[in-house]
Length: 136
Image (cartoon, rainbow, N blue to C red; front, side, top):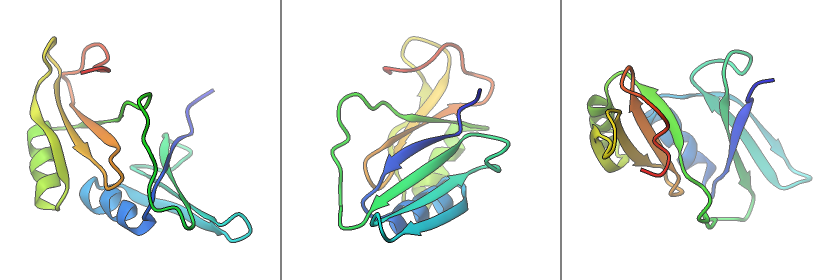
């Protein structure tokens, strides 16, 4: 078994695709409209779906926003340099909500950014991750 994808519901698919491709460097792997169901699916990632887990963006036509809820945490992405990754996000108009630096109770270098729908994305600097940073 393996994880195939994580699905996020988004209010503006084009804005979300722009964020994940231009700001975070993902590629659109496939996209399909489902007119009878009134929704569009877009799959994005850093590699092909047969090699790695990807992100599924679901856009229900006519729905502009969602409540994120209190159970959702974040998506984690490994980066070579969290400090440079934050600078790149800001240079591309993205929102850094926690600047890069060591986590409070460990040695992992982390940062958080936010997508257009308010979903949090954690950057974890390669080679610094210890145990999970969930909850920090």
